[in-house]
Image 1 (cartoon, rainbow, N blue to C red):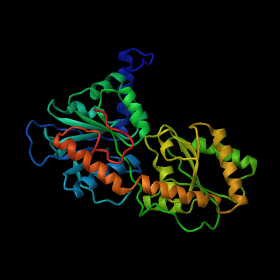
Image 2: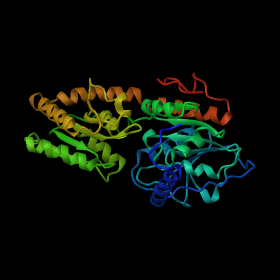
Image 3: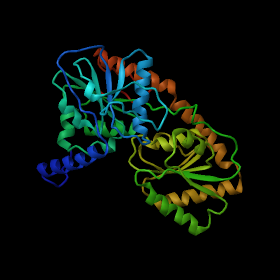
Image 4: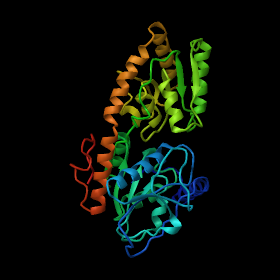
Amino acid sequence: MLAATGRSPDGRRAVAYARGALERLRFPLPKLRAVAEQGCLPTVYFCAPDFDVPSGGTRVLYRHVDLLNDAGISAAVLHRRPGFRCTWFENHTRVVDSRATAIGPEDLVVVGELSASLLRSLGPRHRFVVFNQNAHFTWRRLSAEEVELYTKSPGLAAILVVSDHSLEMLRYAAPSAKIVRLHNSIDPTRFFPGPRRPRPVISYMPRRGASEQARQVLGILHGRGVLRGWEVRALDGMSEDQIAAQLRATTIFLSFACDEGFGLPAAEAMACGAYAVGFHGFAGREYFRPEFSHPVEPGDVLALSRAAAEVMERETLAPGWCQSRGAAAAEFIAAEYSPDRERREVVETYSALLQGTGLSERGLTAGSAAPVRS
């Protein structure tokens, strides 16, 4: 199905297994215990690593569990260790551990694109969902053959994605799979525009190897002398509330996103009224719009430096230039990625999957721009 990598099949499997073993040591995953008989109310189990550091993908899993339980649908985050839960953000989410949890044939198991190896523990009657929050990571742990095993498995209820880019990518890679696009939400009680900034601030997040690219861009801007009068802040090691407060004080947000499944940092910055400049990460094309931001092709450090310098000059000549466009960005994010939209799509999708009513083009993704593959 997929192009060869130049290694033999055995060699590719060995490399994928070794990479997966290292990842499993760093991010312990739950062990699934499948049973033949249903013991209690059918439940949606979201498999999550025991990794208590900020992660937008894990935050989304917790939020989906809350949305389902609030709607009367039994759901839980499935961790490995008893008593473990993420503490870097406030939550009262239902959490269970895999040692004390038996997966029945009417339950629904949700695994991420990096943890699909867990599916080997399920029986032939068990159904599962692959919640693929970044299509670029799909083949990071698994070989092409292993990915094809789950995309063509009779137990696959659906592949869920969070951007049009991931939808298109996986449609092309797995044309026979059922794929549904869900919309993330940006919390409007945390991420909203603040008052007029008393001084110009540039913020960025040094994540996923972005530190080196940030060093290059900031070095170029420093060399040109355009950073004078600007404060530069690296947002790292902060709580969700601290990040939001920093973004509300940001004039320009520099995005170093590459190969994103959605790209939460730039969207959250826009929700706070910041003017975003930088890499759209492919998935971010849907919100990195030129009328209120300055998108740059991922990896083009020179183009990002030029764009940032141009925007900084505009802001210097006309203070408030960034904030006026940031206000338009905030309105767009609030409308496009609202909690109500996410709640509707998540509840409708999992209700249908649990009931086994199938995936229809209408209803499941009401309001979504992308149709369902069936």
